Length: 165
Image 1 (cartoon, one colour):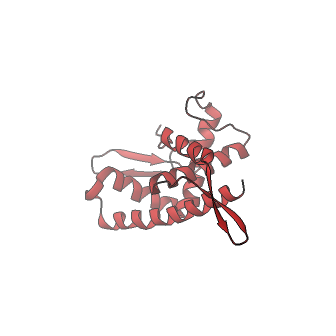
Image 2: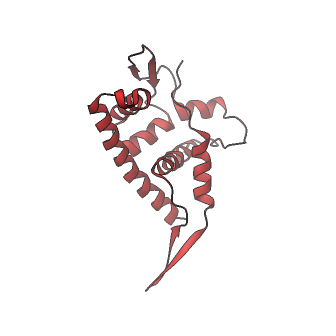
Image 3: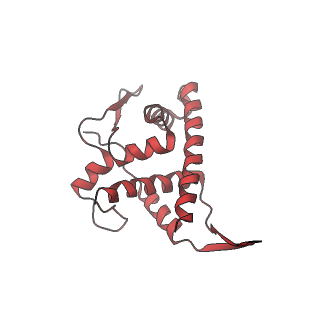
């Protein structure tokens, strides 16, 4: 069973870096504002926001999010994170390989929050990541559009989260 893509350990480290980052204080006329002292790349910004969303989802279910160097995720965490049953989204690549992804689970919910249209995002990201420049032009354009939307959402989410701490 294809359980969908695994969350990279680098994303876990990115959020840990974000959370542990020191703050820079910029004085304003009314006091001080706090801003993260770390500037993340667009890819790391998306990973950090996805991790924040999946962590919130897991903890909301009473589950402990996995961490690098920690114990492996339990079956319950794995199911909550990646979904269960057969993959609802599938796409056959020109090689004949079929890629599947779930629409349930915390990862799917994070994708919907960041990219809006999970089905469209799945198609675009799967084709662009697997076919690179051979991906159809329309899918490359959809990837760029949805990634830009995701980045805007991720920055807003991370800023709001940071300002609440």
